[in-house]
Image (tube, rainbow, N blue to C red; front, side, top):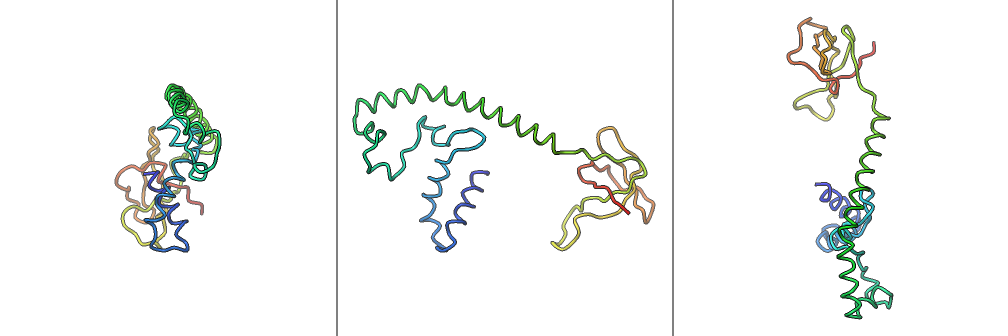
Length: 179
């Protein structure tokens, strides 16, 4: 899903001038996606699969150290064997990097998020559920909190009618209403 979304967005960016030519642009977009380092892993998807960095198309015609290794068959076999041996080590390092990345993301989220808590008697707005048009408000209400349950759920009462709203509502779907 995330890969498809990234590919789709990159194809859209490349098609600003060449509408309808997405099929011609797809290989370049996929190549760019596979050879771009990911922040979460610190490696490219190509490296994760093959154990070595990709040789870019412009490097194929030039005489560089990497292209020289490919031409020299025994040296190439040695390099492939070495890369295969390092593949498991690379994947282990990526796992450590990924764990650190998740911990950093978790701590950043914990610093920024503030839990919503309401007391009995507070007025709240409730997130709109069901079908609505684009121009409708995202919130309906106000409602009065009649009871706060232990699990972060709340029992609400309609202010106009005084009747309890069916079901309990989680704080995630409520926001404080200021008069």
